Image (cartoon, rainbow, N blue to C red):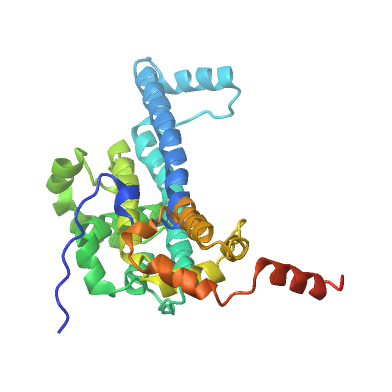
Length: 308
């Protein structure tokens, strides 16, 4: 019988606590930072517009006046539903990044030489992600926190209902399942969420984007390479502007320089510190001794191109 897994300890310094910072994670953080900035600006603008309109005798006349000033063609806005609809729209952008990250980190794990399962019919993106990580579904639910997964999956269903006219009864059941976490969310995150799809606020957006970042961080902590063989597999199978094999081959006759170069390469790409993983750099250097030299690689390339 497998041993129960513990919840991963919280981290306030992701880049220090993640042993291997996947490129998909780096991209996700950048994209979510951009969306967060846009979301803040949109929410401020919509709240200001709503407050100004509701202070007028006829809120729709105010809208028409402001639309004319900005050259926008519109004659009606449902001000009561403006913020919920804005948040639903923002969730579309968030989950585009979530799904891209989960797909990309699966592909990065394959570079290690791992064989991952195929997606099952009807399986959610989160269930598939949990099953694809080392340890399997149940262990990873415990490591990541099932309530965080359920909350984020609720917002995925909100996105689906907004973008694809989803099943309202299913959405209502999903909200009933996560509503019990409102007190926990307010205590841990200082947010009044989750809310129903028709009553979403900026707090719902903030909860969704924060959960995405926290879960992505912990997924990286679980999915990192298991020793030198997987690091070498990534170096061989990955595509990089600065080919790590070439980095080693150019310096192979000077081992101290080669060791320094590959250590810097791993840190600059993945914040992976070989000093924290005894034996990994030695194994890479032993493997590199079997590689052709830079001169041999250059000659082989010229020969393949018919230049010699």
